[in-house]
Image (tube, rainbow, N blue to C red):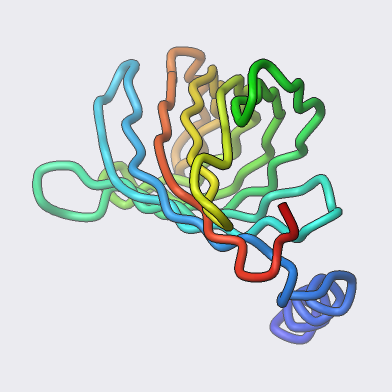
Length: 160
């Protein structure tokens, strides 16, 4: 299992150059049945329509869940000057430590992004994230999850 994971990570790093990638951080607020907030870190390879992210959510001063996901930038529509509208589906997998269960989710996001400063992208997105939750005893479908993210992404070598 460790070898397969290492091979997948190695393949992903070989498929794009990290020097042309955008590195980001965002604040996350997740509403629905359970409210939680936290942060996310991500990497977006330049010229590659995917964003790879890791997210940590907190509840009552402890870690609620950790997850990793891949977002597909399906569309990025120019609105005005530096402002763009985008939409993206996301597949994610994680673990909920508060309720001792695995999380599989598929989100649909819409948001705004823009380069208002050189080499710096600001973004705001919101969406719907239905989740399949599996514990040792049973499974559950949670349809009422609505995440909102606001963040910044730095592009060290992006030509503007």
